[in-house]
Image (cartoon, rainbow over all chains, first blue to last red; front, side):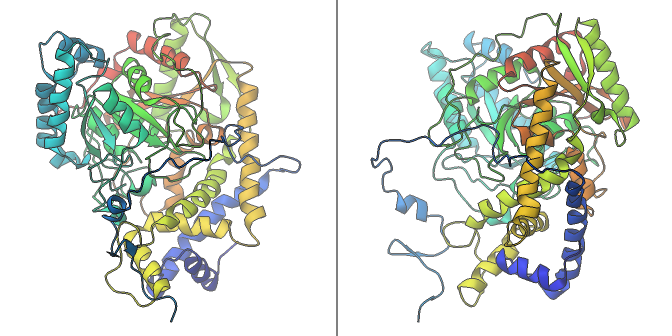
Length: 95
Length: 484
């Protein structure tokens, strides 16, 4: 398998990582090396094997439907790049 | 005191032959003298450390001391510690101050331990050499031209150079064990779910597990006693009765069955490390253990499966770094999408971006079955191999890493070569098994090599017993780098 430059740009867009034209070729080469290594997975037949998503067979715990968190937005927002009146500021999305 | 065990330090503190403030100052002085050369710490906060030491001295004076009260412990900069800058080795979090404590930090605080500082690491724990840290690489105390391993390189180097009596790390594919091996310290990754991930900056959540570094297995047991425990805020934290992980240390090794997977001694293992491991295994047989040849037939697939699963989980976990709620934001941008793309392009380093791209691709429409589900099926085959193996043996041993520490730059240009450093360690993460590395001797250029011990689920006490008995009979773990 070999990724095309267009595929790499599409993945970068999905990942929200800007990729310059200058970086495209070296990034693509390294991704292709990694996928060539990953291709070794195809050597084994996994038909009938259930996927394992987790080390322990856990079911999610349930708890009382009660408020457990206090409002700490001032503390949590103190590290945000831009905040005004308790709101995170981003470029305008809706005209 | 620099070389004392944690039990000896605790005894000295309780006998008042040294105070926690004095002990903390001793190690802070050592850091001041050595960190310029080794770069093992990203952040120090002398005022906070000394304040904790004073509180520990008061607790010692009141007779309320716990086993680690007053002992300084360094923490990988992946754990949130309230009021401490917590960077995860990234420009993205260069100025991030943690607003709350990780469960592990709470546990050490409750035990009266002193936070000595935050240790350098590969960016977002993605690396095996510490070369991906935004804050520059940690240097190996045994040879400062060599890597300390990664990703918990600062945690390993700080203990190896006696800048810290003990430290914490995290291990997603070998990030505790490989640096422990390369720096000649002991390091333990517990069974998945034993140590809470709450407040640990997430890399690959189904694999990430915190654990301790120390000079000996005995010290690791004391540290794990503090770190382990149920925490409702981590949905994968296991509800189990508390254990004393030091309870089996003194047991003789008579009857211990050690499995030796043929796949861990094949091509790719360097001759010097092989010789070190074989000598260590002879020592185990002398101590009364028996060795059994076993096979983990799918272990060759652990690296490819891991490099699908870990990047997939990372691409999801790291989507939170978007320049909105915390961390870095690009100084100039157009619309919202442009802000995300520029922030993430500038805030993440090359390796982190690579893994996000790999993860994004394997989870994308049309590729999910071929990559992600395939990798998860292989993950089960690997776990099944271990389950079969543990019918025949109590622990599995082999080399921790295929070579001793390598030079800076040697593998940095070739990600796949770098990934193969973790060829022996990754399978334990995929299966969720406990695994550790202990000093086992010296290979090429006088550099240390580690013995890897993998146990069955929840057998940490047994593994620590096997490691401790070896350390009672050998002195590899006491060896220190010259000139440091």
